[in-house]
Length: 118
Image (cartoon, rainbow, N blue to C red; front, top):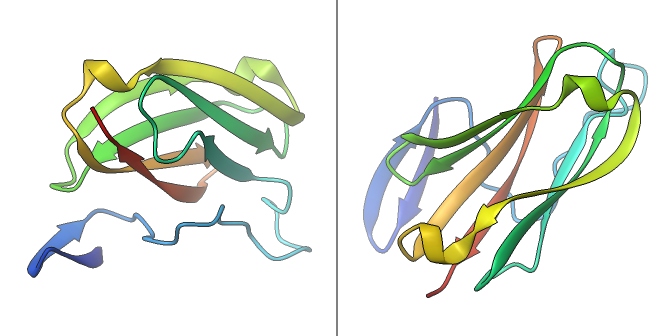
């Protein structure tokens, strides 16, 4: 569990990092090519996620609110190994606030913080 202090309130989020930069795994691990980044951050319109997959295995992109509730899920393993970009929605479809986007593949995950402004 990860903890995050937002506006003086302590929030606990399941297996999510609070870094603003894309999170990557050190070279030499099975998920060395796994990375995720949200473009247009803070976002006011379309939400685009740039990500890299380590292999063609099953993979999933999820978006969580600050309470740790999953608000979006997309299966992306069929994209295959390498760098990809995917629109996952629009900022107007969600309340303003801080969200976390997590990419998971083969038991490894990386995450990035996203701020939505309406």
